[in-house]
Amino acid sequence: MWVLAGIVVIAGGFLLRFNPLLVIIVSALVTGFAAGLDPVRIVATFGHAFNETRYVTAIYMVLPVIGLLERRGLQARARTLVAGFRGATAGRLLTGYLLFRQVTAALGLTSVAGPAQTVRPLVAPMAEAAAERQGGAPEDAERVKAMAAATDTVGLFFGEDIFLAVGSILLMKGVLEGYGIMLEPFQLSIWAIPTAIAAFVIHGSRLWWLDRRLSREGRGAR
Image (cartoon, rainbow, N blue to C red; front, side, top):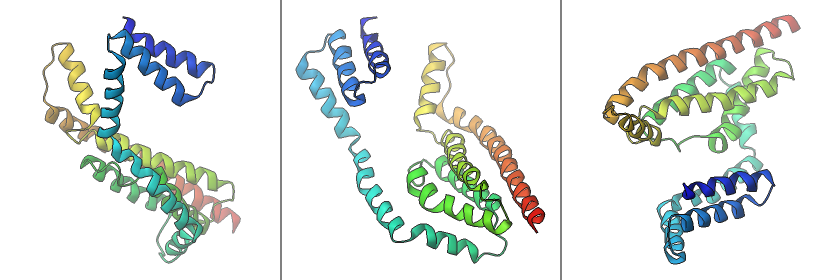
């Protein structure tokens, strides 16, 4: 049970508002010592984990590029693009993005899109422009932004479970095996499909209702 001392360190460090990076490092050291590892082995474990996940540092290259594109008018161009589509509405646009997000996540391409890469610079501005053209009130802008972020989360969360090698599928397989229930990852991913369809229908209904609300406000303003 001593190896769980790291959890106590994390909880106490965050509660006392210490530096998060320092808290995590101390927690890892405490856990390593409690497990009987020597300092060299602990440092080697840190290095191995960093080497295995070094692709994460790619975000430090992606974010400056996105920031530069935004400064050069990416959001404005996204708004202009939507203005050229006569039948585009906020709900329809976000429904299409929801389908795209679910399908790509189901194929294991979870990093293709996301809040930083697509929602903030592209999807949210396009949805806002469509909402304005529908006649939505200025205060609806924040609601549309929130719905764009929610669409990304729903699409990713309920789409990635269809992919065989995603962490959640492997976690469920391990938990079930602990209770004596033997299932293959393929069986779990197959049963994730009805859940993904239900999530698409439910969130799609929310987006349809958003369209109706925006259109109603537009008719009222006229």
